[in-house]
Amino acid sequence: MTTSATSGSSLSSLLSSLTSPSTPGGTSSLGQGILSSAGIGSGLNVTAIVTALVNAEQAAPQAQITRATAQDNSTLSALGTLSSTLNALQTAVVALTNTSTYNSYTASLADPAIGTVSTLSNAQPGSYALNVTQLATVQQRTSSAYASTAAIGSGTLNIAVGSSSVSIDVSSTATLQDIATAINGASGNPGVTATVINGTSGSQLLLSSNKTGVANGFTISAASGSSAGLASLATTLNTAGSSEAKDAQLTLNGIAVDSASNAVSGAIGGVTVNLATLGSTTLNVTQDTSSTATAIQAFVTAYNSYASSVSSLSSYNATTQVSGPLLGDSTLNSVQSQISAALSKSVPGNSIGSLASLGITRQADGTLSLNSTTLNSALSANPAAVQNLFSGTSGYATNLNTVIGIFTSSTGIIATRQQSITSSLSKLSAQQTALNARMAVYQQQLQAQYTNLDTLMSSLNNTSSFLTTTLAQLNNPSKP
Image 1 (cartoon, rainbow, N blue to C red):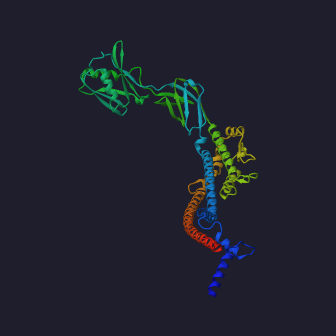
Image 2 (image 1 turned 180 degrees about the vertical axis):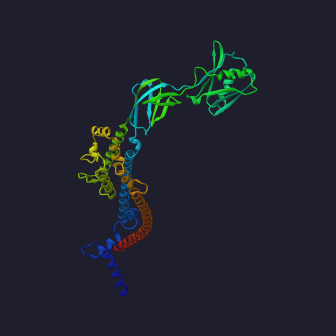
Image 3 (image 1 turned 90 degrees about the horizontal axis):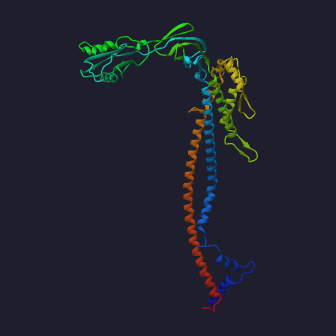
């Protein structure tokens, strides 16, 4: 009995101490804190906790991937810009290597009434005395007059131009119009056009050669067995008249020239004279340097665009501390160095020697300036030297085309660099995918752990509430 009373008294004393008001350093304060601590159990914000932990775990590798991806994309875009501006410059440079840029000629007649002149790239400068004594003409033959409905006769008409010929079958009821239609519609027509002219005397058949010149004149005959009427028509059309085929006849500096066409070509290489009337005049052929000047100006413009682009790509703003995407980039530095070197050299053996002597000078901002007066003077004085300055073996355009090609070709430095960056971006994308997958698993693990903890805390909270209630009842035995 004494033992039981003592045990009950000890338990009562312990419970009383756990539920009595707290005193500094007292045990009852600790017990009360454990049993009633805030934020335990179902009060946990599991989603917020898990999200914070996942974000903390992901932050460092995500920042690295994001930073590397942004840098690669920026560099890739900048290299694309550099490649585009170099391609534009190379287009202008290639034009200066083409012979056609320099071999442009213009020709004129002192008396434009005589005709017009056109040139090709193989023309040569010169002045020629031109005397036109005869123009080339087509051959024309006219039949006798017939009634429009009259049948001419049956048989076959043979029409020949040079070695080409065609046979036209004519029925016994055929009129002049029927014969003209058959001639024009013949698939083997050698070059003759038939027309019926209805005049005051009746209908007449007019045959004309399609081309000027004696060689393009025609002959007409009726095949054996043809009727007398058709044979008579053939004889009339085959009789020479006042409109026979002629060649153009002219002289150039006293040298006789014949041409089947009034467009006389071949007499002077690269020059075609289109004759319009008879007479004498002077034919002048001069080199047209305007196309060369235009190409050189296009080069300067393209270079300045390149210089502006490079300046932007390699810029640095000290105020904002923002740099261009290719500042310090080895590829850009190499482009600038090699292009600058190609333009700084002189062309050995060339009487002009340098771009500066041609009127092209470098400005303080890295662009080029063109003095048109100096350029035109050089083109007038020695166009061949200007051509050699750019398109010769050691010419500026020749060298620049080679240098730029090293960077812009499909297997060039820029393309290789772009392929490498693209590969890097692919790897970064794979790293991002792997990180996302890893974080998803990590989030699931944390979600499970903290959900279990929340469940445990909820259970402990319920136990705490029960013990608190029980202790309160023991502390107040008078209450039911």
